[in-house]
Length: 127
Image (tube, rainbow, N blue to C red; front, side, top):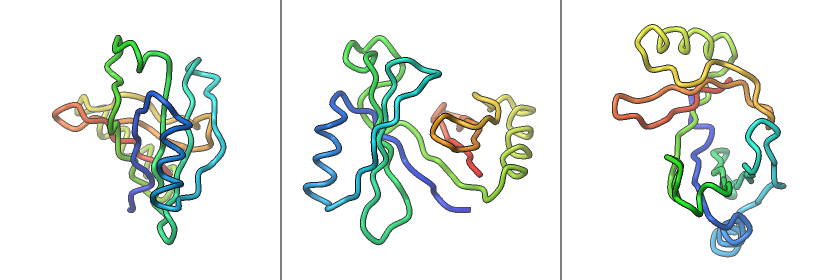
């Protein structure tokens, strides 16, 4: 297993991307706009020499504070290595009441499920 990415909500996606590029010389990917969640836009940041990514995320609900999504770190993504491992862990978590979102292929290409820690922090488990 390895950490695939961590996610950070931001009010200004372009400003956040510029910050990571300017101060950390990071590679910043193209914007991804979700078809499933209108208004959601993200960009992945990769630091030089590291495979772990930072997902910068924004949406109109961030600015008004009406959502449980808020500016700051959002979730951790852990790569399990394959889709069978994702399905198996999702099933275990569902039995324990910890599954938030069943396994699916996301618009940006990840096969993932979302589970919760006992205090509610989200963890994406990916292939």
